[in-house]
Length: 72
Image 1 (cartoon, rainbow, N blue to C red):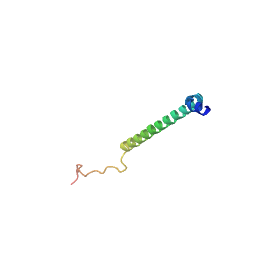
Image 2 (image 1 turned 180 degrees about the vertical axis):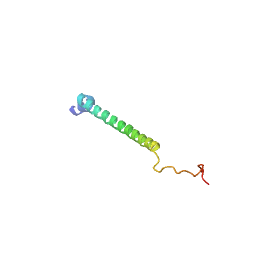
Image 3 (image 1 turned 90 degrees about the horizontal axis):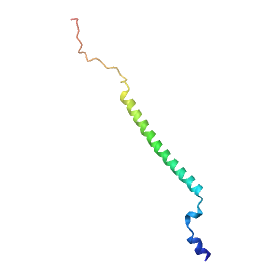
Image 4 (image 1 turned 90 degrees about the vertical axis):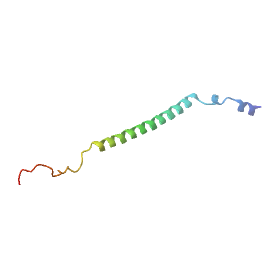
């Protein structure tokens, strides 16, 4: 009879609510960490792409020789 009573005992009564809450908080914090890391990675990628767009050319522009010359 005792074995049968142990099986029928509700599962949630054996858990300490403080431990369950602490585990849930850790899972939540870990999920937030993952989301923030992804967001920061996207921000860094966007910043690098923006810097590539707005960096000046390394070589100066060469004039094409279409200027007016006054000497002959």
